Length: 456
Image (cartoon, rainbow, N blue to C red):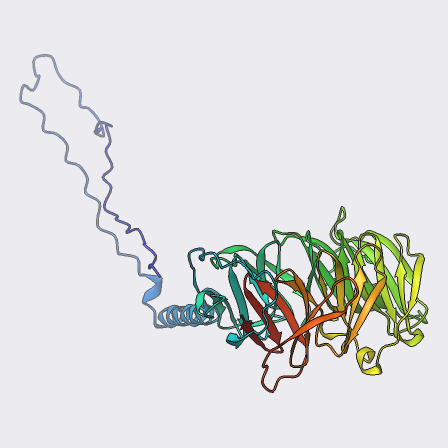
């Protein structure tokens, strides 16, 4: 740090100048012819006696002790501020935009080899954008070369831990845990690591980010926050901290299950005191006042343990596991259609981690991973189209084909009917849990729990 510069004060005696003539006490009467022709001697200027110098108030021992104590306190406070300063504990390195990746193959290769892997416990889904793979673990967000895994840029806050990192608007949003909840958000350019926006928020621990292309919403059990692409808050729903305007939230004492978004709307499962069943509420991502949600509709459901699976346009798909039903609701909350859906008890025993279902979207459909099956839903009316058992995650488009992770590798599917065209072996070692996929040029990214692996 550059030390502060203090101007020096210079003081000196200031002379007082006067034009007033000196005056005598009286003038004696003169006789005619007795005029004194000698020149008159000027009167001597009076000289003031030097006064006694005023004693400095800081010469006393007590005052010196007080001044010393003040210096010590200031030094201690400065040390504490320095030790806890965000800037002191933040390091970063930028990169030039990367070279373009090779084009993806025309079809999924017959075999795939792991190129590299890296810890990335804060990314629920692999992040591949701008010819860069973003990993996030501990306190560091890093941009890596997709083919080698080499770090090109990084953003690290050594005194804070990451809550979650996801992508929206072509940027990376890193959410850090500080004091209460996940309150520090930094938005980064995935190509260079440059900071594009920052904000303080109120997201809860365990939050996930869900986005509809225009807005991002944080999940939570008691509060949902929604941001614009510049991270300015556009809506908050639930138990608002530091409440300023009372009676603006419709049901602040409810707890929340799963959350889904689409077309500037948020759908949430509410569990409220006094309600005998779960409730589905859909509200808008923006309103005139950020703390006064504009609810599109709210409706009591036919049972408990409900889960909102997906939204498309004005439609919302909800799973009612106790009734073994999947129900589609319309723009006004009315039931449009219901389909039988019997899932293993383990799939629906608890809400998914982070309060959001494992879903993906392609140009042709929406894919939902229940925990043991991949279910294809129509983008037009959210109706179920087909189901594939024994999968590890939802599907994505890679090399113009639909691929779904399965035990031992990947299944290449006919997207229309779910028929398996062929399988591709992938060695995942001892890992047997859920797998989330992202494609980046010729590279296929697999999120295997806290580890990200790149395949080609």
